[in-house]
Length: 389
Image (cartoon, rainbow, N blue to C red; front, side, top):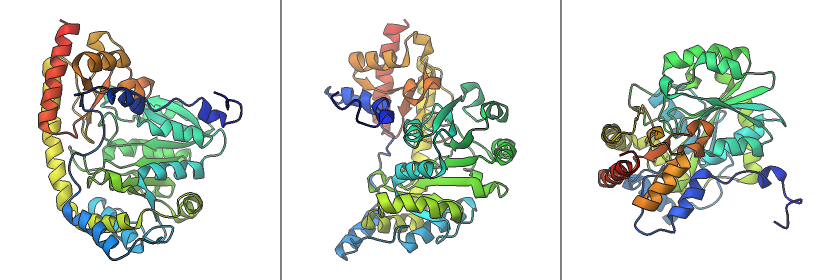
């Protein structure tokens, strides 16, 4: 590359997304069945779409305030109180962002200084490590294990903390594992986070897809709430992925600093989409319930079928992914997915795309119709009959 010495060296040596790289290959083939993308297959509910359309028809297409529409921030805070019994002030504690991805970026750029360490439980969403590095931080991977249902254990966390630890990223329910943390689980790590004054960045984008019990947020623990930064959005709960409406909930002093980056880089999220968010947050609870029931049915089916055909699969307690072990085949995660795509026209995501801890697994999204899931199971079963007899 002719600009090798002139561009940011962090970017130069950064690996491309393991998900996108793989699906670029899949896109060149015809007739591929794909269970790879983490996107609900539901159309955004009509009353939410109508709110965006109405905003456009009324000419509500100008910039909003940097933090987002006050009515949307009110709706978000009302939602967190109604659904999770957590209090936030819409004026002091909330910023509307362009999806959860912008939220992750500007939070990390705000709290990290060069060389600060961020503990990242893995397997983890592919963007976290890259954004940490772009913000000047150092990624410290902490391996979550299937035997623990991919939960974060206090005795493990303690081993990874150093005098350079600034933050930890928590994503429960988790992508790609579907793991969750209960209140009892969190209660065991809260004293550790408090003792070491660690910022807890908690990505709760799959909060409404918690199948066993109710979603628990670290922000429920008042003793550390000032150092908890909640990231969430509308993509998964309301099937609004393309609207790109996310948000940050945090202490006022943190919000004031985070807002500076948001002001200079984004200005504000899309105005018509913010109006859609208002409608979703205030009136979308029935939509959440409908999608939740459908995803739970699909989860139960795909876990049963994967275990039946010989791929050991734990029951995910949240999100819309399963993370079966493919170790029985003797293939690496990438070899498995490449051969599966080549021989069966079935696209899955290799587990190592989510960090070294994902090796020996693949991620399968069940945010697809049951018909597509059944086709995928048939292809997988045939593939396994060839490769493990």
